[in-house]
Image (cartoon, rainbow, N blue to C red; front, top):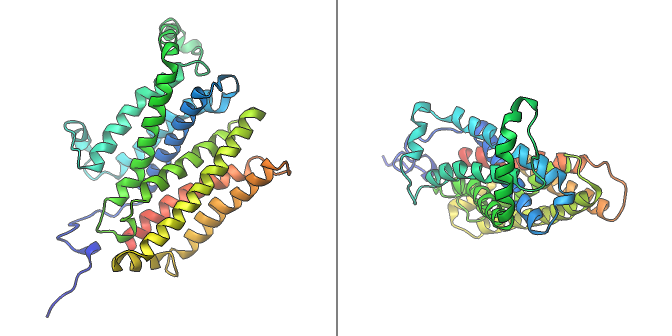
Length: 309
């Protein structure tokens, strides 16, 4: 008797592969959101938007390390051998996405601190940390001379972080629905959209709001195009890819994908933001909330669909 075992459950291909729970899609979402905030911060500085960058340059920069730390906490909670977490930083393996991710996550923290020290970031600390203000002023004086360079570093490191969240899934050939080069760019663009949506909820000025809405409209359109390319790529791919697509084309993840991710997470906010750009009244918070919910749903659908098929 011959037993046929598919690749995604073949013990010789993916032995003892752990089942990812809610922590991983939440971590991927927060990583993408932080990536979006970092890229926007760099764009604002390169365009000289300091005077109208309260939600991006100040509040967005404050939230970025907090949200990233929360995401890393979720990742830590998912680790089976938590005491071995330090081993990620004892070596660098170029062929390992996890190794790349561990170092990217560590390196973006100093970039975020530099962004906070630039004009438009944090000016002074509160009374409990007032003793740090003289040192902070020195740091701000130094970083102001390299604002453009730091802006480019913020864009580059944020883009790396955003793409990594998709590559982490796409390199796993044992999960056919993840096996696509589109996932890296898709998760990056989704993170950019989430970053713009998050900044829109931080009470931006009128000029900043218009800029963020225009950018988010472009990001949402790009995300929709990449999703279409993802579907086309799987339909024209090998048999395993075509079969895996059934999970979102009639299978158990069809309603969450097309309803929550595409419908409520992309098409609805895209329509609302186009209305806002054409000066038609829309509640300011609805589109950003749906964008963030759709970005989170995207990660949950992909993570759990990949493990189901």
